[in-house]
Image 1 (cartoon, rainbow, N blue to C red):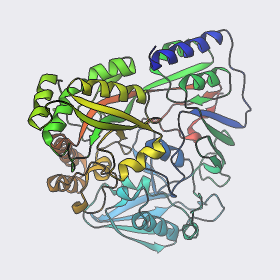
Image 2 (cartoon, one colour; image 1 turned 90 degrees about the vertical axis):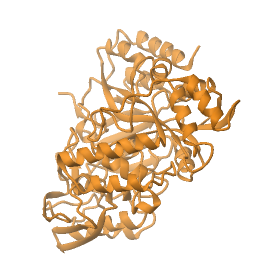
Image 3 (spheres, one colour; image 1 turned 60 degrees about the vertical axis):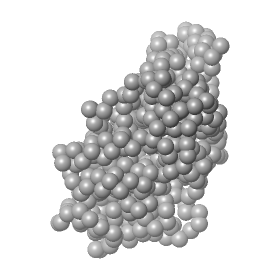
Image 4 (cartoon, rainbow, N blue to C red; image 1 turned 90 degrees about the horizontal axis):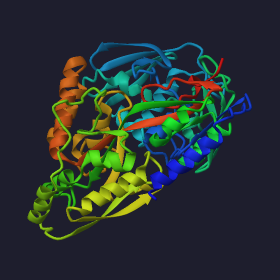
Length: 502
């Protein structure tokens, strides 16, 4: 029996056993979450990585000058307002009376120290802030941010500029002191992370004084916890279990298209994938619809490019590749691999829904054209350092545009070493000056002009083929009827949004 089938059978058995009972109430002061994996770290200390889930969880502790609403539109954060007297300058006016979780008032010098540290110390947020040239406190409540070039998109990057007390930045490790709705109460890596309500939070106090994320890697076990009343929220519900869960009166299931695009990435500056014919052969070997059918039970959408349709910069003229395995074999032979090409296929074991099944299906399809991919599935805390060191030539990876537009993704993934600041996650070895130019050009525009230039940059990535887009995942989460929650567009777990049912 396939792993997915075993999981479905177990989940169905749990659902059947619980069919006639409602989940008992949990302790009212604690919001309990059962999640598939742990964070990679607590900002800004190593070994934290710029991973979507990790960032989501850390945003419960930290804020930037600007935030995102549930539709990924920018909104005031620590800054009540801002203005741009010229195309390189933004002046932010801090909200009055805001305090850090330790009770200290937030002043302009804290913002200056935090943004400078993010740029200078190599924090995971530096790519989002790479255009900043200088940060100056005009007085206790006003901060002037200057960029190197015209950069009208700066407000869309400031949500990643987490603000901490200037004094805290002198410590090592840096203590997790922020202005978010919660403070860190404890963390046992790989097992559990817990939060308590921030008594100094500027907004409406969250309904739950305590929140506890328990790591439960097995999806059927997460479902069982929810049905037994041991969890209020669970993530990565197997899509094949959604129908059964929806029949439970004590449970509400949330299914949404994800902003995450999964792809196969190459190290394009080393053989064999430095040869564009080999990269094209992989592209032609992979049948996206077949991967979705066999690994995801049909729950997903083929991807044609780096970003999904809702993202600004998506190019509707780029279509998913039509597989042609005969052509793939001919390309491999022309590139010097007429028989078999052995390669290691790396991927995280605990980051994507059905990630192991996707790895297995990719390897199976590659074998049909003569590429023998040995699967190396790692905990994401091992996987990220591997690809960051450039030690993976072929890997399964995914990226979500946190700002709702393609610019932050292009900055982080594809800016070359010669292209200026950015490119921290250029694990592909891409060094293309034309792509750098297109990225820079897009960053200096706004509105419709920016969208046109982002599409040009996305098209250039498509031409270079440093990655093969596979699919856009659909994500499912489930919640107890004890709580009310309408997740934001990006499905971030913002604890203050989860309220006790009225």
